[in-house]
Amino acid sequence: MPILTGDVARYLTELRPERSPVMREMEELAARDNVPIVHWETGRLLAALCRTLDPVVLEVGTAIGYSTLHMAEQLERGRVVTLERDAARAQQARDFLSGARVADRVELVEGDARETIVSVEGPFDLLFVDATKTEYREYIELAEPKLAPRALMVVDNLLMSGDVAAPPGAQTTWPEESLASARALNSELVGGEGWVGCVLPVGDGIGVAARA
Ligand SMILES: C[S@@+](CC[C@H](N)C(=O)[O-])C[C@H]1O[C@@H](n2cnc3c(N)ncnc32)[C@H](O)[C@@H]1O
Image (cartoon, rainbow, N blue to C red; front, side, top):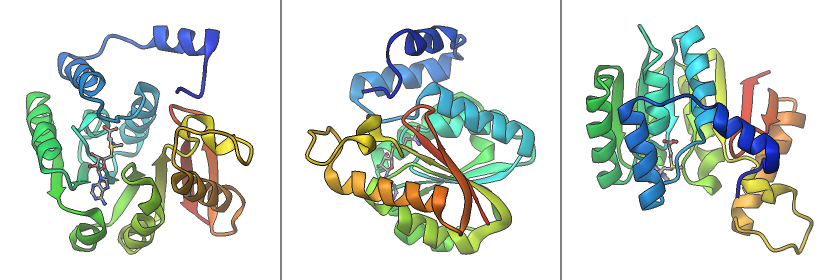
């Protein structure tokens, strides 16, 4: 379920421009095979950040490389190191990223991010977190030593189709433990002293934060 519904949702969807053939093919495959990819607006926000910062990016959760492509397209000297544990999806991502001619800006590291983060080489200017929801805190803790001092972090699915705002006992589509993880992280990013952060209703809800 999208967070936004009705006229605003329709308006924003219709505002989306034509995608490149590769990006369109990725969206079609994701819809057909139920691959969870970021909303176009989330990808585009990442793209704008990459355009202006030209960062070295650490992405946790590649899937078929859709968010990776949004970012990689905008990089000149920057690059994306992206982590994926599903070998079949990693191969699909490689094929798509080659087809889009951005493979030279992307290093795809296969394996469980909780093991591979320690071996990747930073410093990273942008951390994008989009893998197993209950593992988010672990990824962030493992990635922190690899981040540049003023690195930016973007975290996807922090509103979980709106379920994070459901009253206690309400029926939700997202599992309770994912909701608990998202609520805890949202409180920390927005209200904790360790972050300058916010949660934005873009896509499925994204956290945007930097270390205080
Ligand atoms: C939501 S999808 C990523 C979507 C991608 N960021 C995009 O928008 O195109 C999450 C991906 O993270 C991968 N994943 C989940 N837990 C992981 C882990 N511990 N280490 C590496 N990859 C993981 C899953 O296999 C899945 O492909």
